[in-house]
Length: 303
Picture (cartoon, one colour):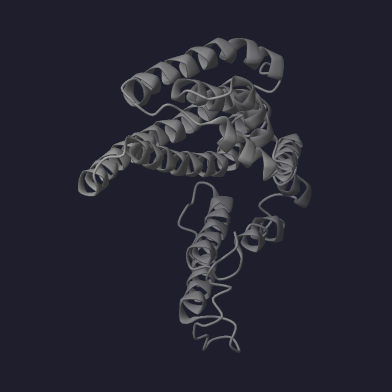
């Protein structure tokens, strides 16, 4: 929706008084020609209004593909053109733009912004990990997966993943530095000859860093899997659930509580299976001892 082409100030814009590129001008002409052609030729004889609607769809598609104007402005075309071409009334067209599902999406979006603003996932995760002291990789994986699973029930699962992932990456980078320093300290204390020490230190560091990187893969997959599993449990956890609840023939039967009672067991079993698979695949054979309390305290002090 930010339209990268629109803000590309260095590109040549020979069309429309320096506002549009050639590609944008081509999209404008193609979209307008499609609308006029379909409205005049009217290839669908059974439903005459379908030709006008097809023309509006082609216009919007061309404007989206060629980025003629920002997407959110193109999305308003049907609101204006459908009443103008007498396809439907303004009231009915406007209802498709704003209903209780739209309000729910906006509300969840505001909640996600608030979570990111106060760093709630980071604070919760670090508090739990600090309680545990030196965190074993399996406990770290369980902590992150449990937190994402619970938050995704109350927030949007995609937003939870986007908020938690940068924090997890930063924590894993700190763990990698911790491992490098620990290996170097152990080799120095061993007092080996210089050549053997350098060779042994290099091999030990590579093995330790490889373990951390392997665990990083499992942790990032765990965040994604647990957020998806948590989003299954509630109507607010996943975007497709919004549209399911908005269907008129299902709205009276599918409520938040009914869906939660139905989907929570599936969600719980899914996240447990995901944890078992990831733990077996990425954690079981690791020599990585975990993240020290000093590293966690440093991350918490940054908040």
